[in-house]
Length: 312
Ligand SMILES: [Fe+2]
Ligand SMILES: [Fe+2]
Image 1 (cartoon, rainbow, N blue to C red):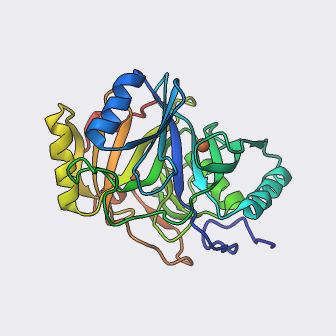
Image 2 (image 1 turned 120 degrees about the horizontal axis):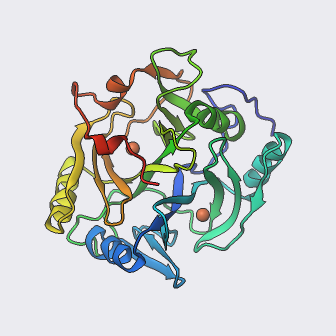
């Protein structure tokens, strides 16, 4: 298959299969404490424990959503699912042609059958992955024991902290058939953007970027899908009972139209809860918005200073 590329919108390479944020490997300051938080409070299920790395999922299937490893906060890598090995090889060829250094990582993670790893222009490591259990990606119910129904349904998207927002988003568009749904800027021709929201499928964003001057920055937040605003409220009540305060929200983003709330986990990674993410016409043009407009659909809101910080 030949794909026409070098456009910020409208993939011409529409292969079937799910192409969404699949998982991330996170650093945590205390592995035991973080494992207890994610299982006992968030309600995730332990899929595999390698001793120094614990793989956790929402229980929908056998694939994991996050891997946690003791170390600096932020991510080692994040992964986006592709349809099958043929598609993986097509992307390998395209990345090779573009001079991108690509390494294979096959079957080393639970449920992951094949993977390609490479760096975005900012240096953050990305993986394209195929998974064994492909039946479900999203659910409308909480799985596992659900911790009283408060657990999230699964990961929704990742927002990276980047010192090269426009370059990273353009890389995804040029080489991996993403589209830029929203670019955060007052000037579409600006050399740098103040944020970017990119999609590979129907949803407004799968991988987003917020700016951070530190080249070592990797992540702003991982977003978990909840079913409704009531579900979000139950989750916030639950974490609050465990002395984890809300950082920002509840509100509705304009970029993505999703209802949001944010908090920082023990150890310092940031989680977003998201509900009602909008879907976007595949041919939709990139939308250019100033930051304040993209941030809130409900009128001006002021996030706390901590929200401007990455977690890595
Ligand atoms: Fe991975
Ligand atoms: Fe988000």
